[in-house]
Image (cartoon, rainbow, N blue to C red; front, side):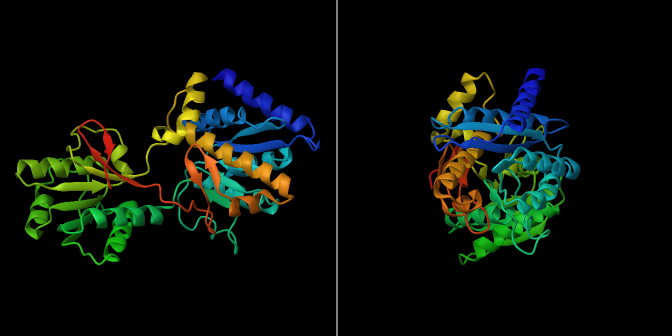
Amino acid sequence: MKHLTLLRTMFLSLALSFPAVTSAAAVDMRVGVAAPLSGPFALLGQQLSDGAHLATTMAPPGTTATPIVVDDKCSAEGGAAAAETFIKAGVRIVTGFFCTEALEAALPLLAEKNIPVLTPSIRERGLTERRAKEPLPVFRLALPSDREAAAAGEILANHWRDKPFAIIDDGTIRGRELAHGVRTAIEAKGLKPVYTDTYRPGLDNQSALVALLRRAGATQVFIGGERGDAAAIASAAAKLNYPLEIASDEALRAASGGVDLAPGTLMIAAPEAETLPSAAPAVAAIRGAGRPVEGYAVPGYASLQIAMEAVMAAEAGKQPALAILRSRTFTTVLGEIRFDESGNRSDNPYRLFRYDGSRFIPEAQ
């Protein structure tokens, strides 16, 4: 870790000390990378930084790619300080940010300099509208929560079209919003749940809830809640000899807390980045560098691919990088990426997976 910290410091010092390349034969692609490199999220920040550094080794001949990595500390103060560092370094695009507080503090400063931000993880709705009358220049590789719920609803509407289903939530803001979004999307397809309710989370025994589901005639249920609740509901259904197909979102990827999920449990989520066929070059590069292929390493690699291509195209077309991000389709290790007018990726990466007792397997759709 000390060696990596020293390497980051050297990259930053060099970037701040030397002028930008002005030769017509070369482009200096200075890209900011904001990541939590200290505190509880440091591991995620390191994954992102690893992927970013490795992507820059694939810069086209005749170009230089310099990642300016700064610890945003997952705080407003850290985000603002990171933005000031990026502006001083003369970066063209900033990638990263895991915490909304850091990104919100950085965005106004970067927007004033027409520097766009590409984030691989923040999904909060209304992120850009709270600080400015016009949308700020932020582009997201992860769909916002409402788009995630809509995608889940569309998938389940096709999968459960002729089946009696229920939609329940654990009463948390996240659980309620997820369940509401799924229900709205399903009802837009002309389907209605036979039962909806808020359940009490965290119980080892969910027999009373399962009894209510059985009384309503539901044979399928979507849960806006956590993995432990999905496991407990499945366990109670099994004890009552009641066949019940359970579905939820990527919360099911959490570590097991005791009782495991029932085989056959459905999950609607984006595939893990490293499992995509298109991610093979990034996976090979990350493994070749002796770094773990997990978490945000591949998204970090993809973010730098987009940033480098945007800078190259902006330089060639004498346009700001912001305009390129809003108009171009990018070929990345995550596949083809294009952003809509709100800065969200325009495709739907979500898929249906089924638990086989040890892992989630893609379901034919």
